[in-house]
Amino acid sequence: VGFEALMRWPHPHRGMVAPDVFIPLAEQSELIVELDTFALREASDVAATWGRSSPDVEPPFVTVNLSARQLHDVNLVQKVREVLAASHLTPDRLIIEITERAAMVNIDDTMTVLNRLRHLGVRMALDDFGTGYSSLSYLTMLRPEIIKIDRSFVATHPEHDGVALLETIVSLGHRLEITMLAEGIETEDQMEHLRELGCQLGQGFLFAQAVSATQVSSLLLQPTTNLR
Image (cartoon, rainbow, N blue to C red; front, side):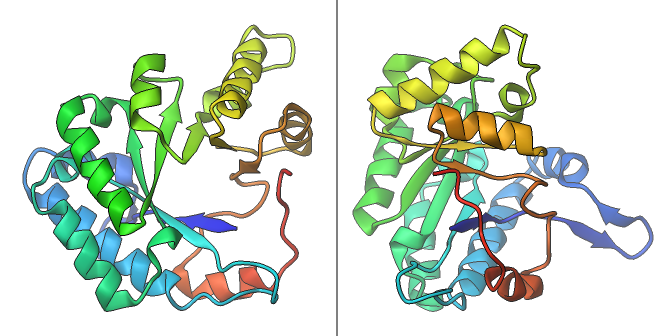
């Protein structure tokens, strides 16, 4: 049903550099805004080429992570509008991912930006839920279409107290009519547990490793697994 855009740096001497190495450095300057814009443009261009896998299935969405600096950039909404126009991607197939920490940098500005993006038809996902502020009052203000449950809850041992938290988080999403997406699913047991809890969507190595954009088309031809 969707893909998350991931960024890797194929360095000529260092090999494949992971984002946890270069993103923190980029965040110390305006370079992070350039990287975010690049990610938006590339992800939208690629997603616009994805067709329906069958007549009764919508084309997949793509989610793109935004840094706190990009989220509060005064030009963000115009950039998104230009990216959608250039790629011809329908707005509802672009999902902007933000973390709780990024949203709380300036909640008033965040609300203004999110409302303007929603006016364009773009959706929002709250990433790494449960690891940041997790304020219920802010959650109702942000009104994300998707909550991404952090992998630390998914990987919890069945006898650990974290299982109760996982159940509570999924139940909260149901009550607020928010789609719940569990991150970091690696085993069939984890998937079955999430399915029993009613978690609608999931991502992780159980479904696929990270792949290049050119490999997505072949993945779309394979049978898919939806937690519902």
